[in-house]
Length: 231
Ligand SMILES: Nc1ncnc2c1ncn2[C@@H]1O[C@H](COP(=O)(O)OP(=O)(O)OP(=O)(O)O)[C@@H](O)[C@H]1O
Image (tube, rainbow, N blue to C red; front, side, top):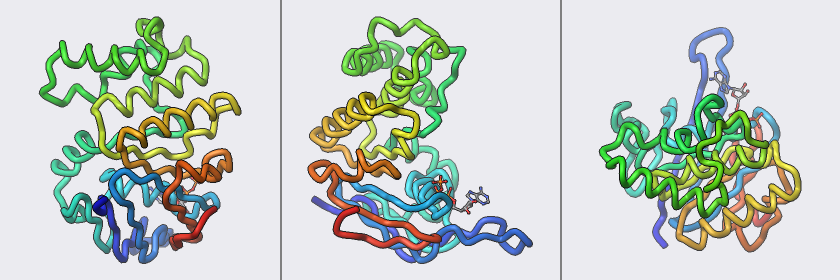
């Protein structure tokens, strides 16, 4: 499979030229092929979220390149980055980032609002994803009425509604118990089977020890990235 994402000499410096300047990423070389699953482990503050946000076109590097499907995205203007984010990526955050007062159905549709997709198509996609994640009968309920595990599944449904090629998950099991973690692993395995490319930052051995799921393992320390045989 072709390389889908490749970074070279990637650096991120926050608060540049200020007293609190901080180098979060140093010359990072990360690469993943289409259809692979990569995990990223490292202590708190080592730069995992910073790397995911650069790869996911949510922020720009201070220097270095990010090739995404053979396009250098490091210097693209914001409106192109926004398009890439919307079309290519699904994001699963550790805090879910859901709108608690809105229904589950409306939360899932949020990423589609800036697009041209018809209302009918939106509804049919949402119904299908909700069915797959066994949330179909709760779709009109408000998010605040759901359990943690249900909210996790809503967050996954929202990440999948734009049919993304790449899924980025930042500590996706941070608030899940063992059973829900297993459920998430089943969902990730299914996504991999469907050809999705997945990048997961995690401290959780229940994820990074899944040898069948994981193709590439990376370790971060103080902004430096190292590819390892296994974590
Ligand atoms: N927007 C920002 N402005 C300034 N410093 C930041 C910003 N975001 C992150 N940092 C700093 O950059 C370093 C790397 O942070 P990052 O969140 O990427 O690490 P992490 O490995 O994801 O940590 P955690 O596991 O705790 O989420 C940390 O020292 C952090 O304080």
